[in-house]
Image (cartoon, rainbow, N blue to C red; front, side):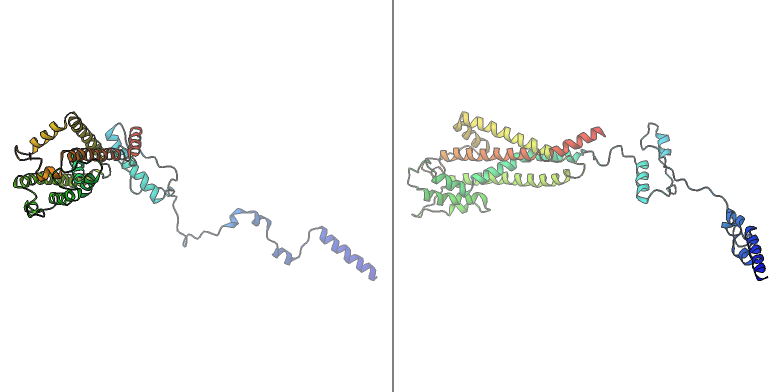
Length: 349
C-alpha cells in the first residue's frame, strides 16, 4: 500500500510539471511578459497638474553661417549684406571665431591687414629731401674734423717725405704750434687764443693778418659744423617719423644723399687733379675775401702748413668722405628683401 501511494504522488507531480503549473508565489515573482516588452512602461506617468505642458519650439540651427563677402560690386547690397546681428552667433562657434567672422563681414579695408600698404605723406617727402641734402654736409663735417685733428697733423709731420721747414722749425716745433691752431678751430675762444702763443724769444708766432685769416677759417668751419648738426638732428627726427608702420622709410633719402655726395666729391677730385693750384686758389676766392689768405713763405701758417700738407689733407679728407658715402649707400639697402617681399605680397593680394 505504501508503494502504491508513493507512485501516485510521483505521477501527480509529473503531471503538474508537464502542464506548466506554477505556484502563487512564483506567479508574483515573475514579471509579466507583455509588460516587460512594452516600451511605454519605461517612462513615468504624466501628471497634468505637476508637469507643465511644453511647446515645440524651433531649435537653433547648427549649420554653417552664410555671410556676404566684404567686397561686392553693388555698394547698396553690400552694405545690407554686411549687417550681422549681434545675437546670430550659433552654438557651435566660439566667441573668438564669431568675432573673426563678424570683423571679416563688416570690414571695409580693401587690403590684407597682414600686408600693410606704405603711404606717403607730405612729411615723408620733406623728410626724404631733408635727409638727401643733409647727408653731404654731415659727411663733409666728419671729414674736415678728421683732417683738423692732432692725429692727422702728427702723422703728417713725422711721415717720411714730408718737406722740412727751411726757416728752422723742426717736427716737434711744428707739432707744438700746430696744436694751438687745431684747438682754436674747435673751441669757443676768440682770436686772442692764438695771439697769446709766443716763441721762445718772446715774439708772437702769428701776425695780425694770420690771426684774421684763422678767424675766417674758424667761422667757416663753425658754420659747417652747425649745418651738419642741424641736418643730423632733423634727419633723426624725420627718420623716426618715416620709420613708422606703413611709412616709406629713410632708405631713399640715404641712397640719394650718398649718391649726390659721391658725385660732388668726384667732381671736386677731377678739378683738383687737373690743376691743384687753380683749384686751391678758386676755393679760397669763393669763401674768403681777396688779400686775406695769401702769405709769404716765412710766415708761420705757411711754415706749419705747407702746400704739401693741403694736398695730403685733400686726399685724406676726400677719401674718408667717399668711404662714408659708400657705407651710407650700403646701409640704404638694409631691409631691401623684406620691402620687396611686401611689395610682391601687395600685388598678389
